Image 1 (cartoon, rainbow, N blue to C red):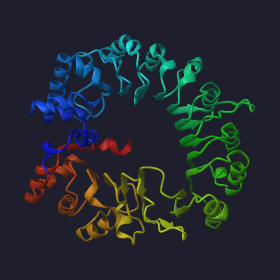
Image 2 (image 1 turned 120 degrees about the horizontal axis):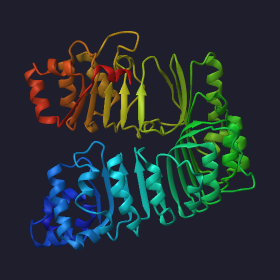
Image 3 (image 1 turned 90 degrees about the vertical axis):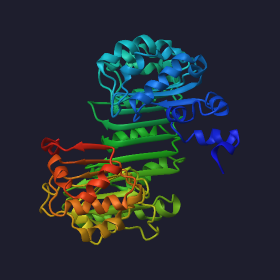
Length: 479
């Protein structure tokens, strides 16, 4: 069936899966029907990864059309990984012209953006969602003029030094903070009375931080802490203040005291009676007693975990580290190292363990070994440098078959190859490109890339498939 024969209702549903800037670029002026259709859909605009000329054309359409300005519901502007910087957009259009703007995301805000933003942000009366990502420059100035009391969703890098800022959190329902100290977290739980979702990327100790034990954050339903660096006693205090918590996600490394199934069972039974979803990854490095770590990990596979709550785990041990994690693996990144033994859960098929992984880093030795892993949805693949390990071998043609058994290459869009790659690199890359038709960007050492171009067949593949190349400089390996 041709696209133009579809009813409007189906087209509206299709448009939800497309970038709205691209929708206008593709369908505007096609015919009267499509002109009218695309001017009657809510616009969720993201100017990242879009050609500058296309962005310019679209912004000019917005300038000339007041109705389009009313259609804009959400907007994402960025200075990172984009041709169309925040300054380009703000120099053409003021944010307060979008009377129905509900959501604003700003990525990597620079100093030269602050003045314009401070004059515009107070005038966006309908804003209910604000996200500030990868931005450290004078963020306190943005916070001081942002009308927090009207927001329902907020994402910020850190809290301002003045914790009085959190007194305006009473309306916040969803909150994400990149870096947070324990005393700040206590302050949030104290003031954000409507908070239902809290995501803390990194939580740190800072001095003595005791929370009022009589205070309860009763509305909080989901808590995520992706890097946890506080004592178990303080974690216990936090969780006892969230009696209605339904979902908990936590990632801990090198805190052996938290790898204690009995303590967790007691805490969950006494304070988290509504907890339904518990995702975790606990790890430690340079353990001395492998028998002890086996026993610690196996204690998370008792009836309390598997039969009562259906929280299934598996664990892996290498020569330098040990990890236990719930299934499926909670993170979207994974480093597949050499000499790693995976201990699967006998109660699970383990087919979906790594379904969440989209970024995979692989050491060549892991490909040569009898690998126990499979990653079906990886988008970015890195073949690690071998200079930092015990040998200097890289992959050879016979290892491509093993690589295909580990990774579903058909989904891959980005490939990073070590600047130290040796031997048969061109034939390896050629075979990977043949198996991974969606790859459109690579990261590689400049000298290695030059050497690849002498292979005519590979050069044709690169010329046809690759849209973006990033060169690895020597100092990148030490960052």
